[in-house]
Image 1 (cartoon, helix red, strand yellow):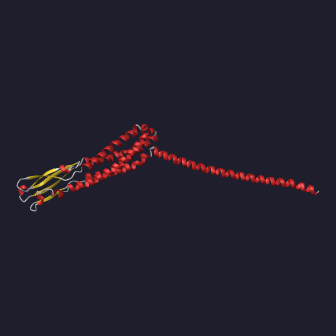
Image 2 (cartoon, rainbow, N blue to C red; image 1 turned 60 degrees about the vertical axis):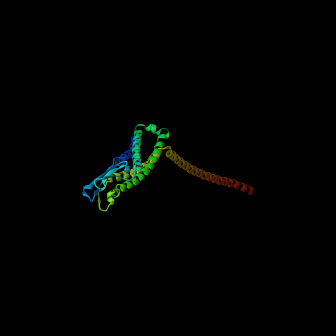
Amino acid sequence: MDQLMQKLSFEMCPNSSLHLFAIFAFATCGGYSGQLRVSVDCMEKASSNLSIGIDFAYPFRLHQVSFEAPVCEGIRRERVFLIGDYSSSAEFFVTIAVFAFLYSLMATIVYIFFQNKYRENNRGPLIDFIVTVVFSFLWLVSSSAWAKALSDVKVATDPDEVQLLISACKVQTNKCDSLHGPRWSGLNTSVVFGFLNFVLWAGNIWFVFKETGWHKGASRLAGGASEKQSGTFTQQSYNQGSFDQSGSYNTQGNLGQLSEYSQVGGPTSYSNQM
């Protein structure tokens, strides 16, 4: 019982880390919202807008994010849209994080309450191994895609780049300025957690593989080959010892026969001489 509980605690430790890091990954990305501010100072001060707030959030469909900016011609305003749609990479990343969290949670429940079913016919370890390999690959792909998308989001929401979309900022007599840009610490953390999840899942492949029949079968074959080699060596040693004993016995037998022959032959020759 103690060995079973020790093994369960050992198997649950990696899964608890998988839960935690998966939660951090989709929470830092899926819960993000940011804002940038620019100012448009027109030659006609009445038309100026010195604080234009632009809000955006997950899933980063920036082409749907718009704001109003002065045209600097009377009181006219124009609606300006940001450029880019990065929702596919962001949603893919969050989806993998959610499914990884759900699977690791389900695997923990199976380890605790359905250990016998898990090991029955070796089906559970094999499924667990295959799913772990798949999630490792998906974490690598989704984290790389999201890192690239985040880099593009930073460029598209750079206040200096946004100013180029405003018509009034293209006129030299008007003055445009960047007040502040978005904070990226949360999204940067999401990328870090994404690659940490890849490392955790990839490292967990070995521990899951050890529970499969493939590893146990290879261990049995290696153990059988070692025992066979040891038995062959013992048999050779035994045969060598038997040969030595046989040779010694035959040698002593020949010496005995020669001695007996000399004893018998001696008196016979002597009687003949007499």
